[in-house]
Length: 357
Image (cartoon, rainbow, N blue to C red; front, side, top):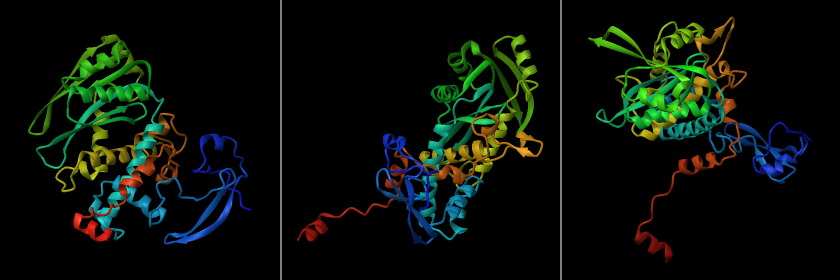
């Protein structure tokens, strides 16, 4: 019999899985689907069979894995949902349900993997967009760790003190402060208070305020808010990327986000209709940016690393297939499947009485 010990059984509990051996999962026939022939496996511990898609985002889909991956790739390259639907000839609602699955898995992957990275130089900024109507302004707050180009924090909502505190607490909780940290932002009023509260004496904080006229930068004013001039000079001397106080790296990240997500593109009809969809698509873009997309600034010789590789989180560049084929022990996939299934319309009282007869 063919052994399949490299894959754990999704039906077993953690206690059962600890005692399972490599030869207790064997081949159990195959079955034909629209996407081809799939293998089934039998677990010797729980005596239940499963297929290769069980417990993954591909389970229950009437498409190939390559087609689902292609939809996710097009989404993170700035293609709108309507355009994605026209390419494979699928309906818009089908593509939307697929992207909901992909975004849920990407968000869970971000929560599990974006941890224990070094924070040496941090930059923060906000990106303005709108949801449903142009009068409903929404801000995407982001942070970037400059030395690795990692994008650890993302908060969607109002431009307020609460969200500013959330983005810094999220970044510091996930990462690891290494000595003094150089933090640079623009002149938004709440940044100084939040940096002092969250980082305290562990941060040297400066602001870069740009004065514009006719959409052109006329003057750049740099000022120290926390720390001393000697500490700033030492951190800039040790930095491999910054020679002066700047917000260039987080602004470049904002440009990448506008190019990667149709919801954020300027003068584009593909705006977000609800806040939840914008947040889900940002989770998918964040996963792609950190773990899949090679960063041109991280090219060393012939190899080009991703930000997660540079931060030491992973050792190789991942693919969407590596993320989507991971089993979901938390039950999040089951919740996604539940809400993605179309529920029947409610039965009226008269119809219910006729059915009862």
